Length: 149
Image (tube, rainbow, N blue to C red; front, side, top):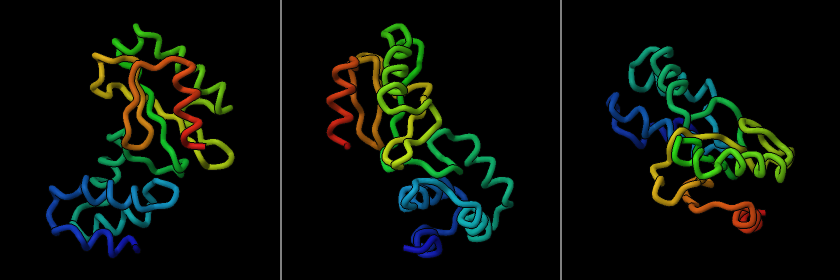
């Protein structure tokens, strides 16, 4: 689908801004929002470009940079931190050979950190795209990543 087709599926009201942005991002092969697509959203909703760009900049789930097929979001909330999330981040970075905010050279994985995934009862936690994984250990991360390779 083209950006225009994706945008036009949504009613032309400002309260659809986030839905449109997520839809555009999820349908882009590199899972990000292009400047051209954001400009089209602004025009469609009769908003300023800076309003659309401000929303994209504010929400960490939205990106203006190309990302991998699988986006790994590791929770770094205080609870996850206490449960050794920083060790899990170091393990992910070492295993994939990238740092948080980077994408593997094969464009398969991007690591991001999230302030909270709402999974405190089973910390530490991470998401890969929309699927949540809890009670992480280095061994469990190895098993999970193997499913995506």
